[in-house]
Length: 361
Image 1 (tube, rainbow, N blue to C red):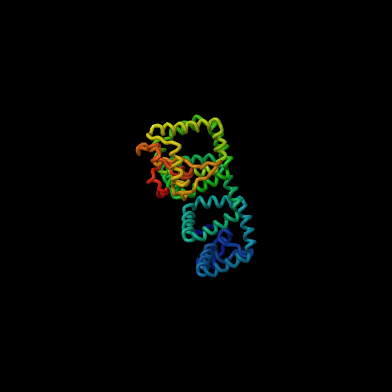
Image 2 (spheres, rainbow, N blue to C red; image 1 turned 120 degrees about the vertical axis):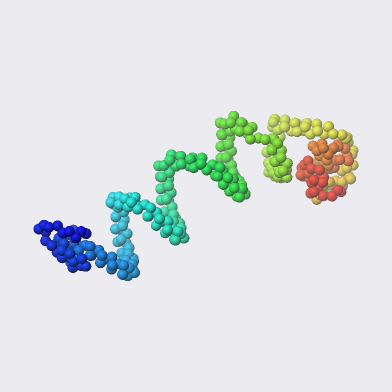
């Protein structure tokens, strides 16, 4: 407010406030009060209101709070009408642009001091507006798909090593959880998974074969199988028990018969390469010496089953034929009679390597 009063024919009015100036009697200098000009000028009225608000701050806060509670619906309707108007949108944008840093700092301070309250409000809002939030997310994603994809590609390119390390650490920490989830998914989507794998392999045969050739390492495969030998045996036993009919049907096919002949020939070739001789009379004497029971304790020295008048057993080399470094022999001193289960479980182990076999009879 300037102290220079223009010299013209406009009527003058003296302010009754602290300034006491003679001012033009217009609404530029005085407020309207019941159809007349107020007694104090705008400057004095503004200063008086500030002083009153400062001295009655708590009283005004309580009064405003009671008013908002008693006129909640009316105020909400007015606010809604104001927000839907074009002026409100323009005003919010302009105000935010002019006070961006100040508003951001206030928001950060409020979130830091009211973190629990903010989290609770967000959870409640998400629960009450879940579908609306999802719809907004879908709209935003479709509208900015290319932009978001490009941003994600750039981010992954900048942080590739860190992301790989984090994913590897998380996977190692939750390995069992991942395995269970994959098994559940495979069980519930088995046919879909097989159909997709078949279609993909048929359309990418050359690429899939080249990928398998590049990743396959015979030495690493042998080391892994040697370290997980028991796991493989248990897996194969379970598979044999649950797929007996399928295996029988496969052995009757042309390919199955060919594989069976190859295995038999390979076993006979290895057996012929070792020394020793075994006769049927020696086998019968061994059967009587073992009292028609299994040689190993893993099955409790179970008695051999009898089918069509014959005992069901298998010839078991105590020193496996495949362990040539241990000098196996194919004679009665290196062969015992075992049930199919124990013979399969012992596999290519030496007697002292298979502790489940127990003591000799």
